[in-house]
Image (cartoon, rainbow, N blue to C red):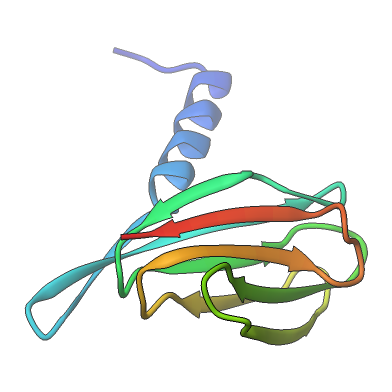
Length: 117
């Protein structure tokens, strides 16, 4: 079967989306990395469910800097990952179960709820 240029481009995009969740094997256990894009001063998702040890790669595909802060619902604990310049990524690994809220302290309307099982 011969693919048109548009179909080939669409397949390439689909492959890139599938690649956003990566399995990493460490000490015999598989963990996942989910990619959450920051675009138009919004997170690409509003809710994510993970397992303990999984991580989120935050990719700033925006024209402005962002600041990632992760807050636990159960503990009065916030981890500030710092300023993230446009076109940069940062990874946060969730080490304990619970409900977490990720916000951009520069753009408070950017919210992501993460459930870790």
